View 1 (cartoon, rainbow, N blue to C red):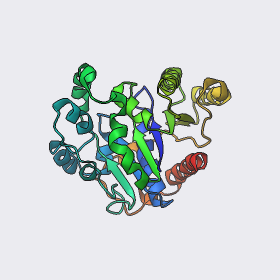
View 2 (cartoon, helix red, strand yellow):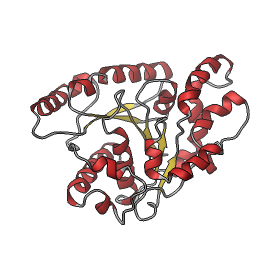
View 3 (tube, rainbow, N blue to C red):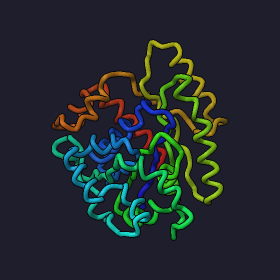
View 4 (cartoon, one colour):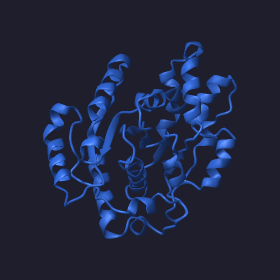
Length: 284
C-alpha cells in the first residue's frame, strides 16, 4: 500500500506545487519508486507542469480529470474512469519519467465546489470519502502518492487529507506565510479525531529562503525551536533558496534530458535530492 503525503498551506505562492512536482520526479527517477501525483488544486499548476496543456484539455472535456469524481455524484451519471484518467510516465524530462503518474485536476473544480456543498444531504456516501472511494483500490500499485492540495481547508482538500498518512507544510519563513500554520494543524487534528484517521505531520519545508535576510533567518530559527510544541513535528534541514528556477521547471513546454539538466545541475539538483532523501527517511 502506498504512503500518501498531502502538501498543504493556506497561503498561495509558497512553492507548494513546485515542491510537489520536484519531489515526485526525484522519487521516481532517482529512487525508482512508483509515484502518483494527485492534483486537487483547481489552479491545475501541477497538472500542466507534468503533461501537455492540450492533452489536459482533451481529458477535461471527456470528464477524465479529478473533477468528475465529484461531478458524477451530482449528475448521477458515471463518466469518470480512474484507469482512463490516470496519465502514465509524465514529466518534461526525457519524454516522461517511468513510474511517475498523474491524476489531473480541472479549473472547473472551483465552480462545482459550492454546488457540491448544497447537494451533501442527498449524497449516498459521506462527502469526505469520495476520493477514498475511487482511489483506494489503486493505491496498492504505488509506493508514494503526493497530493497537491488547494490553499484552503474546504471539502475537496479534506478529501485528500482523509486518505493521507502524512502532511507537509511548505512555507516561506516570514510572518504572512506562517500565519495560517496553527489553523492547518488544528483543523487537521479535528478531522483526525472526528473521523478516526491516522494522518500525522511530517514537518515544514522552508522555501524561497533568502540567506541574506535577517527576517528569514530569525523566523526559520523560531520555527525550528517551536516545532515540538507547535505540532508540526520538525523543520526539514534542507532549505529551498529563493530563485527564478521555479518558473522554468514548471514550464512543460521546455524539454530536458535529465533531472540534473532541469534542476540547474549542481545547485538545485542537490537541494531537491537532499530534501527528497529527508522526506523518504521519515516514511520508509
